[in-house]
Image 1 (cartoon, rainbow, N blue to C red):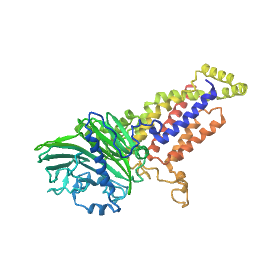
Image 2: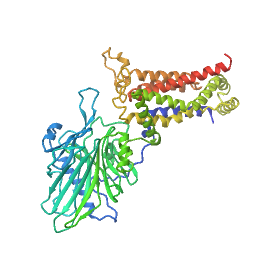
Image 3: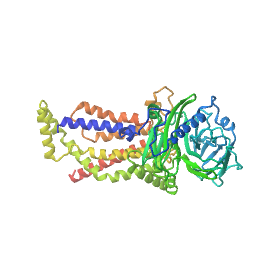
Image 4: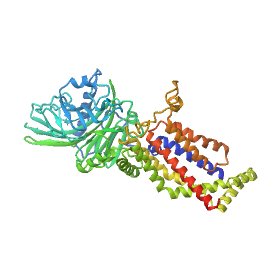
Length: 581
């Protein structure tokens, strides 16, 4: 192996790892793409095992959503849009809002435990908003049929109820009679957290059997600009035994995607919040669709499901039950729902990333330390210390090897002067020198390679964790999920001058860059001056690039660098003591 090639590989590795740290694991390891149809409105052909009547019913679901979402031509405030229609008030320890009686739609929902900002008077997080607002977001359930002329409840249907309020202690019952032999009943309940249960029943008082298809959908028109990040946001589902995801950009580019599944769930997810539908986990031949359509008010994104046909005989009835999770992505709560409700792989609603087997345990470890220290920042520091302790033996070997490499620098330079014009001979003599001195020039890469999945996993945890959101550390860090708010280049606000946002970094990013630079000075340099210059610039480039990520991540990296420096100094002191110096 040629020395120059080795140096180039090490340089490339450093650059690749740095880029990976910026863009996280998903950028390096893209998720498996889902099959999509280029047609944006037509349904795909179903298998022969399902009656062709379902094809028309699926079209009906799309039409139902279109009529409901695209009709309004005016943009109102959320309060004005809610007041336009009669609603049943909703109040639980975790939620507030209402359910619209017209269409029996979930379109007004706020999360009472979470606020928009750190200000005391900040508004609660709004999840669902009515159609007439700038960012409509809603969920609804219903029935469709392929048989013409049968009135069914839809977006314009006003349901009747004698109930006054929906709480975690009291459910509500809605009714509607189509006047032609079908009567519809809907019971809605909600627990003290974020899970709704919707139980539909249809009774046939007529003289003919009727074939119905139960459906549920979550739809939103337009995506607020804050809904962007390093975790998946958009359509998501556990369908056919695997996770399916399409973000907003992908579905706008490639069109709708359709799936057939037995059990599962589907919905729309954001960084911290989600609206997910869980249908009958035993039902077979359930059709699920992710779709996107252009509307007069913006792009409408939708995840919906269509159950297999159910025949309502005269004098008979059919039932359908589904769950709607509309709230915060709290890991422990979602795990509990997976067990109590039997929702398969419900924990995948949270984007644990490529290294799921590390990310989820890391979350629980951090959560445990948080419960001990009462401060997420301290939990991060202690976790970094334990990781460094676990990798202590490997790092020690690496540091010892780098120390030997540093001692060999004069001899390597002599070889370069002697055989500089003969690359083959230089490579051969260099490798002979390594073998004589029992030095492995690539051993320094091992700790780095081990830390890549660890860093990516921790990056995911720190990015999606609700415990980190608006969690304070000490001093000026009041939100570990946000970038360091201090500004070195304006002397922390004393200088009022325009500065590009990319250069506006805080104290912790500067400390991170400084500790990276100190670490680099302790490592042997490469014989190539150009490569040394590039590597010397890396800490400061990383300082500016990573300085705009979550401060919790920057604090972790800085502290990890400090621990590494301390370990190297301890090893250096040990060697000097052993040598009698």
